[in-house]
Length: 306
Image (cartoon, rainbow, N blue to C red; front, top):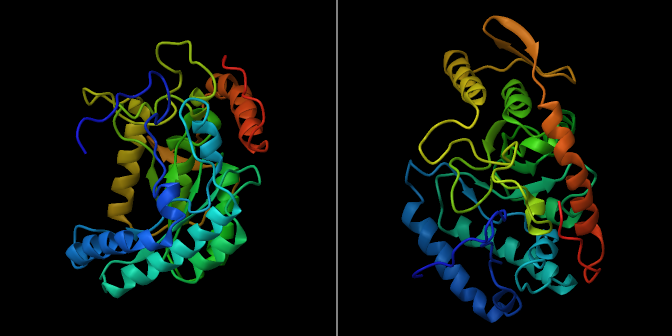
C-alpha cells in the first residue's frame, strides 16, 4: 500500500515480488490469512458474470526467476521444502475456492520453456486432477508451441485449453506465429502485455542479468501498444482484428496439420515468420540467459553486458 518503488530503468518487470513471501510460505500457521483472503475474494465475485475464470497459482513450482531477480535485488531462494509447501498450498487453494462454490471454472497453469525445461510432474498431476480447463505458459516458436499444445490436449481430453502466457517477440513467440496457431487449434490465448509502461516488459528477461545499451529494444519483448495508444506493430493489430472477426463469424476451427502457420491475409495464404534479423539479434543473449538460470544457485554472476 502507498507509494510504490520506482521501476529499475530498462529492467523487465523490475518490481517483481515473491507471493506469498518465503516467511509466510514456511509458516503454515499464517496460511489462515491466505484462506481468509481467497474465500473473501472468490465469495464476493463467485456469481459475477464479468469474471471469466479463477487462475489459482502462477507457475507454482517456478524458482528460476529467483536467480534472475537476485542479480539486482535481494531474494530468498527456495529450497526443496519450500517447493513441497507450494504443492500443499496449491492443494489447499483448490479446496478453499471450491468451498465458495464459484460459477466460474477453475484453472492453474502448467509451464514449459520450449527447451525441455518445465513444470515438475507432481505439480502437473495435482493440477490436472483439480482444474476445469487446462491452462499453460510457453514462450516458444510455433513448432515448440504446437508440441506443447499436443501434449496438453492429451493431458486434458474433453476439456478446453487456454494459453495464458505467450508472446516474446525475439525468441520466436510472436503474434504472427502463435495466434493463428492457437486459433486453428481452438486454443484460447492471452499475450503478455498490453501497453508499454512501468513494468518495463518491452525489455527482455535477460535485462535483469545484462545491461541494455539501446534506448528502445528492437523488437520489443512484450506489449502491444505505446502509451499514446498507437500500435507497436500495425500488422499485428490487423492480424488480431482479422482473427477476432473470423471467430465471431464462424466459431469453428480448422484442424492445424502443418509445421508452418498458414493464415489468409488480404485473400492470400502466406506463411508468417518472426523478423529474421530481430530473432538473430536476440538468440545469443537468450541462450546465455537460459544457460545462466539453469546453473545451480550460487554460481558466479553472469557478466552484465549485452
